[in-house]
Image 1 (cartoon, rainbow, N blue to C red):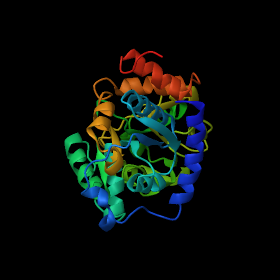
Image 2 (cartoon, rainbow, N blue to C red):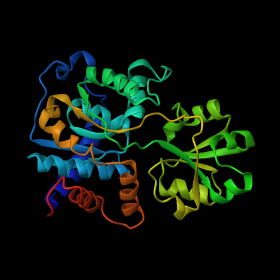
Image 3 (cartoon, rainbow, N blue to C red):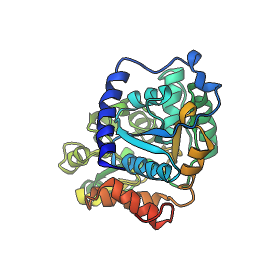
Image 4 (cartoon, rainbow, N blue to C red):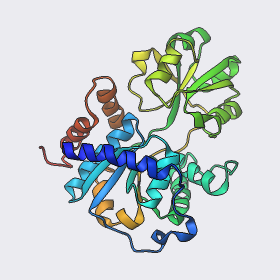
Length: 319
């Protein structure tokens, strides 16, 4: 992608935010995408959720699509409440998502915040529910690969040692008040604060809205302002902050396999499916963790890391 593309991405991001601030996308009743033939636009916009792993996946998607003859731009939109309607409306054509999390988000959007979760630890069950929820919105969920990035919770290593904590059950039994550094949506999402309280009996006294696995969130736990941080299983920087993961021993977290989600009317073609599907046979959870580390710890650019990885797997030619 050229410097011109970079400028276009920045401009597109500003336009997108302005355009979606007052809309939630087309209504289900008016979505021609649902019944129209799958589209094959040769100019595609890829959305990133703004954190390292999403940036890496978006860059890999762009490189694979360009290899298949598509022109791509990438924009970063950190709020799912904004980028999902933009995906429905065709302002964004492709996003990397996580199967169970996205299924539950769409379910809550369709059926209310109190709707019973449809994501589960079983991938097949989760994908069936996700596709059923996505299709009426003009979205197609492509096949998941081998990589899974589940939510995870980390505490300071010193805190874990002091209280003899190895699992989330241990933390619940310790009866300790816990301030949790996470995204603001954690207050309502069943895998987060409510799930920690219900499944493990953890006393979540507050959610500190510092984001998922951000530097600020991890620093808050490192310095004792918060006791635990919501991050992911592919977070490669925990050691730098003196943090350790607590095992999800009761399997609160669901099947969050990486899945591309596309706007059917613009990017529902076999060409897009085949291009992105090439990643499924090679990308693993360990690969994602390694690439995250290269960006977060080694300060390499996501585009460079993504290109090197795809070249090493012979998915794109060496440039």
